[in-house]
Length: 274
Image (cartoon, rainbow, N blue to C red; front, side, top):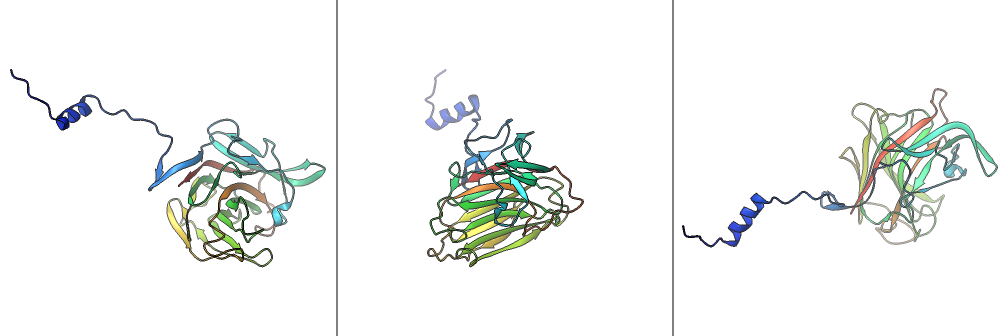
């Protein structure tokens, strides 16, 4: 029998059938047409300090909050596939300062700083009046001046007494107290944010920031300003991410008599796409 020359296309097809391309695990995935550039899935048993810094202070966050932030495992730890920020009523002390409540606050400053992209966090929120978990961003370099001239992006804020409602807000304008803000609330159609994990995200582009809850677009902002520069300033610089669980203060109000401690804010993952 006479053998015929195989065409290149036929040869390639036969090779692909006989030797299928192996599935290769990739370090980068996509959200739409974006690539995953930074993530933490909290799969180990300790915080990755190449990605996170733990804040320790008792300054009240500028909102007369009641907690002291510590780096103790009681307040900040990784377990069960989650980052756990835990608020406790335990009269913790740091450098001679004692407060009735302790809690945790972490940030990616100088470890993860981004200009534009999709920032996505999956988390379960704690219930109880006076509990204030948040996902937010601050400018790394404050190019346009002190707060809030250089801006603040609140991806998610939650008042523990309003279990089905979250807020997304921008802060900008002039230095405090001449600053301003804009944003809106979003209420779950059913259930509460304390019952299960939910995904909170922003899509941040030049001149536009969108907020998403469980993949649903819930808000778009395209108008802001700062006395420090021209639009789209101040949201045209690198920002870093903060996760914290505050207790009390002007935004959330007093701690409820039936609020249970310890209270846990659970973060399943953080992902950044660009």
